Image (tube, rainbow, N blue to C red; front, side, top):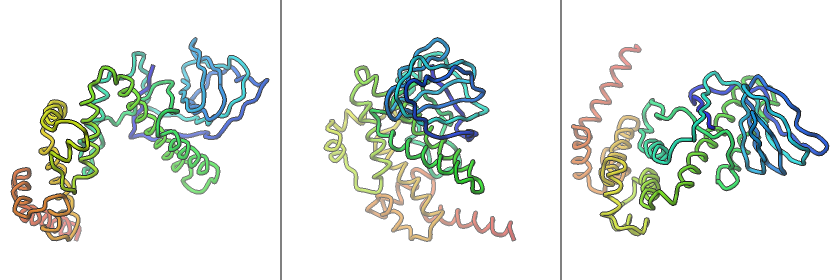
Length: 311
């Protein structure tokens, strides 16, 4: 079982805190009227919900459902954070979490999104299993940090404290959803070729280092893979070659710099990875249908029209 939660709506946080249990205490039987998330930090918690038994250890995350009764199974020593919240758009899915191909597509599409637009990522629904472990992931400490910040906001009761608390919990849920997606991809490592893992690593690299000089030889050295083969797999997976994708990133950032800064066009070309001004002009026109200078005039006119409309 897994859940989908609309990420454009903040959760309404009622409680966020830490619980410490010691024998002979056993978690009481109840059916809450809200969702509850447990994130384990120490010991073991034995719970049952809707006929399913859970043995939660440090790093485990469990989401309790208001449609089901849950109860403790036996006494134990443990510590965990708990988050009580409501959300108007959560969907419970009975089938297994997204298949590996969909996982790869979600991650690939996110890496290709235009970070400079107002559009939200296509997968604006967070997806995470009912129960999962963060103990082997890098996001555990970040999730704990965010929860502690949410606790601090919820306690200080300064203006808008609930809003800040909800924002931190939403960040934690995004981290959990990302870790769930990564775990699902890694869980299928035996049936996903190494090349597909290289594709995602390469997408990350290109997005982070587009301004540097990048050659086929460098890519071969970084990813220990024949460039021509990797380029074919990249095109099959992403729909375009490596250097077409790289140029798209560079031109997208060049457009952002032209529209938002007073930088000279030659400096912008260099800033986004083009060492030659002529080549920058050629590539820019190929991808936009106009030269950098024409685009600069267009964006300047748009801004002037806005100013005139305001005045």
